[in-house]
Image: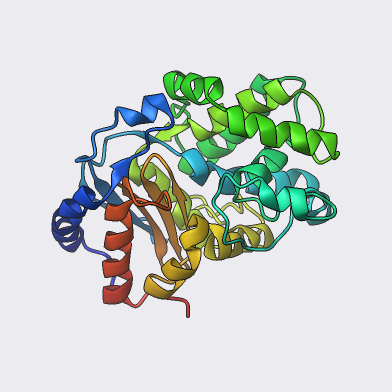
Length: 309
């Protein structure tokens, strides 16, 4: 199969730039509201170790909900499947990512999957640590291992902004605490979760993480199994069924690869045995997905025949 070339990627990134006019920067998180909607970037990291990029590849963004995949991988490795899925379900939903209705209706009242906010909070609650700092370090160290870059950290301004406005997430946490889905301090959990979402990197670093998932959890450079193959498969399955919020079905038809988006405007895609792709463009559609990212991945998948279906 043809490998992504830098020349083609640059042309596509330039072509989709205009689609930013069809979206809107997330405004419910004050620190994200200031993002420039005209910034966009993309990178592809192949399983043979080559990386190409286009646009503003050195621009750093926060992972937001893309971090849910990483937290899930850590929880699976720490606790195993049975423990994780005793706290959170495995089914997709047509509800928005911030939904509370599903945990009100389900019996037992656990979140329907780990990609909605309630499910992600339940997963993050499973991290070890006496306080939020220790819990957060588990995810951050995992990111360092995947990227090979120990300088990656979180954006304190974004984390603070999200923590101070996390009224709905607090509601989700207290509801789940009442029903025994989460334990411990809600504020410690929210501090961990908002820092997790505020981890900052660029498209090339994120594309490398995607390449490791594409390589069944094996590090591209060292050959080390960083994520057990079965756990990597579980994460990729959730990316297919739930990764693009309640636009996952349309994305499966139009693009057809495991992917996870975040409201900063980032999308992580995984092309099995071929590589990882990361796209950034902060203008979002009404479902919370990058309009530039969606269009670019649709074009790339169509050209290279990436769809798994």
